[in-house]
Image (cartoon, rainbow, N blue to C red; front, side, top):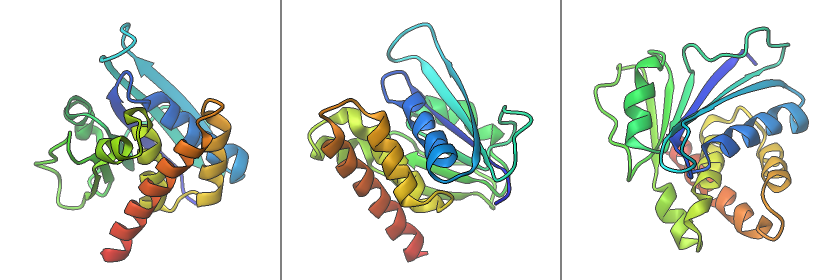
Length: 183
């Protein structure tokens, strides 16, 4: 696998940083790859811009900062506006389709949307939208094994919420997988 640069963006309270942690953990602990994580967030706990930069590679990573994301995952329109200029011309955009309206993208960018917030609400807790997005990421990209991501989810969520988070992961994964198979 070639080096993959991933940026996840959204608002504080959406679980952006945890999403990056889970993806990096799945890669490095459960899939035997190398991974780095850089996180950035505003001083406010909720509602401010935040992002996670994840790098995944089969080889050791010498520079951990994402310059031109191969994959951009956005959970808010503000994150889309801020980070989409960085996306490579042949990159992939994964977005929360009820909060983000992608436009003016280079012709080579592949886009995949999911109503992650609505799915999370259907499951009973809006807070699991990030896990829906992690499942969606796994289903669309195929760069990590579903089992590795599932293990990372279970190892990263609070005790007592494992079943709910596993359902959220599976719903996101199935949605992503179905979009890819449909293309």
